[in-house]
Length: 66
Length: 151
Image (cartoon, rainbow over all chains, first blue to last red; front, side, top):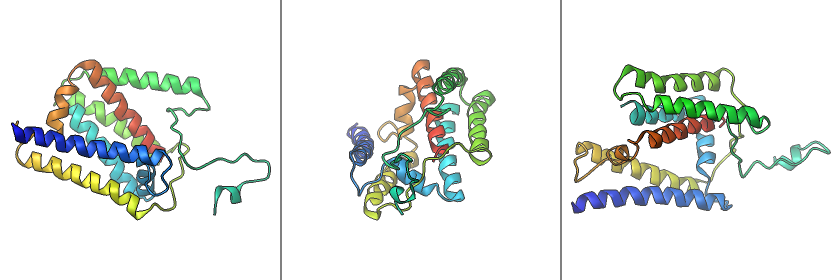
């Protein structure tokens, strides 16, 4: 079961890293964008917008319809 | 060009960042916004209680997806202006985290999400099984969709 623990630690570490990035960005770091900022940047084009929205919809389908 | 340079005389300065989050309906109409969130919460409660792998559950996520798609492309709300550019270094931190998370998930998926190597889905699913938790998660998904539409 040590591999299960390692897998969970890996997920927790990555999600924690993203939360830390968001926290640092919202504290006013000029170098690190918030998730909203980089998502907004990627969504400037029509194709980027479609991909991000499809990703959002896929998450809903994956967790709530299956 | 900065915000200050485009400002009309007498017009208050509107900072572009940090961004404030608005509820659906906009903060200028708080009653409508509150009603919209309550409506979404009701929808989330109903839709999250539908049996998985059913046509009704599929419709439960198709309807908000189609609605937001129509709103986004037909009558988009006031959008939060996107930055003209973002730093490569700062963005790379995000990209590395997202890519690593996808790779970690893909490796678990490749192993058929066995108990010794579970996927994120296998870990999250039991947590969102209770109906109240599931409906809150569904509402968060709906609000995230609305936040994306405003980008």
